[in-house]
Image (cartoon, rainbow, N blue to C red):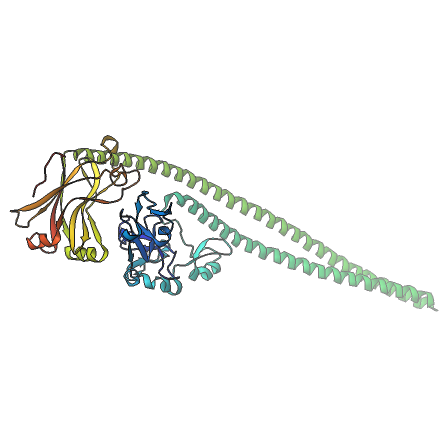
Length: 484
């Protein structure tokens, strides 16, 4: 089970449309007997079977087989009269602390489960969206600023520390910078092309002006030709011819100068266009070459870093595994573990209200086995009894040990004065689900029914002080007789 700092993820059912079927990460784990052993859902009502498995109502209704009911986990038959239905009060669950659904996006808010939906829908500032231009991930509140910066600012990193994605992000950032640089260059070139277009428009206007002048000259020549035919005086005809010739000559000289200027302007425009084309090609070529060299350099550095990190990780893993095996082998002759069970009153009250409560210690190695020794509180009639408990975990030397786990356990309660103690010896049941070699991380926890203490007797005899109990949990040979 995840530690409280990481939280435990549960899927709720029966607590309202706002929370049902939306996985919630609780800061503190919910007791295992509240979670369905079959589907893993945390329902509002559970069925506690005689085999100690827990089912939600949906899974319970599917346990019917050949007219009887059978546990879907182990296949053990059970009677409906032996089933204990337990309801988890909504207030109990909704008051537990949970983390925001946007936790992985940076939201650190922790609040009661009843308030999480209101916070997520109305108050949380860590909702993401995708930029419509560059498709990069940005905070919804920053998307307008991101667009105004031409997709350069307010980009959210989605790697969350994953080194294997860093190379891709660097390349994407690099390409974004290149794109921004090309945008600037493109704006400059666009400005120059607009200027060239404007100049060409001016030249077109001048050509139209020249064409108008040519048309005017043509009209003048036609008028002169018509006038020469109707002239009655040779003197007047000579004078008119002289004047018209001078006018035509002046007009043609003026038009020639304009045509010369137009040719120079067009030549300059063509030269400018060639310069723009050459500069554009050179700019793109240089930007692309720089980007290619940078990407290649980053690839080489990334590959080298990955290889180095992989080698370091393999060395560290190998060293860690050796140390763990040495530690486990050194515990072959260790057969006991002492610890205190605290908050006795709270655990007793929980056992009275819920039927049982387990208390496991930290993960340790005893006789080479990786385990969490502990105790188990169980309500029987009006009393709460204390049993020896055990949960087996996957260890580093499991292949060298005997399986299934089949040892006797001696549970001793020591008096604070150290002048007396009380103990009993219990044997494991040999159930493979509890005592078989763990294939995954851990087996299910179990308790031994061969012996127990009544908490009321322990309290009356002074074993419980400061709301705690001194426990010695020990593996003993099978031929050891019980001590009291």
